[in-house]
Image (tube, rainbow, N blue to C red):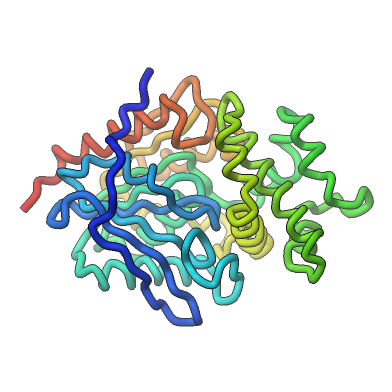
Length: 319
């Protein structure tokens, strides 16, 4: 199967949005300036956007908006944890929508991007035309524990040894807490070593078959520091959500057309999370990719995502 991504394109506009609290967020627009607005919500938190993320969308139909969340990608200050919460990120998306004079838009988010898309849609349902969600991450304690304490470790025992290596043997009863101390500590060498180990663990486990290019990207020090620090910051604060919040408030968005795409063998965000969400959104379409893991760039998942954006081309007509 080929991924059928659209060809590479360049933005027609790039800028920084001042959102207060000392944060400047990089954003860009590409595709059709008068097209159907769709915003790409990246993962992590802390993952940032890349040029390839523009390629899930037909540039003749869509006005494609990419945003680097607080501390991520090209946003400033890099890897900052100050005033960086889910509520801030929801507000930032709303500020961007108003800044770009968009009445309603489609949300496209994977992994943590699905978390933030759901949280934003539940806060501002009147602004959301549709949802395309991949690799559902509900950010409950059990979901974080699966990947960072025990669960995925059983399937990737070799990679797990590298993940726990920066943590002292007697400090491993809560790896997220132990990592948080290193990632926010004064020892720069220890901080960077921890950031690389944290980020590479995710890069190695994101594909059904480990992709060396993705691992290399996750190992890049600039990317790894933001990814590790911001993810760990969010997870130690329970993603700044109340327990089970995304499922309990799903009724607020039950009327919004939704497509859920999930890999059968997703080891980062196991598929039970997609089923739990589907059970609260009975009208949503659930697409299971039978030979895939977590990454949006696995062929089967890429194909399903592009098919989803193409499907909504017939659902929403350009004015």
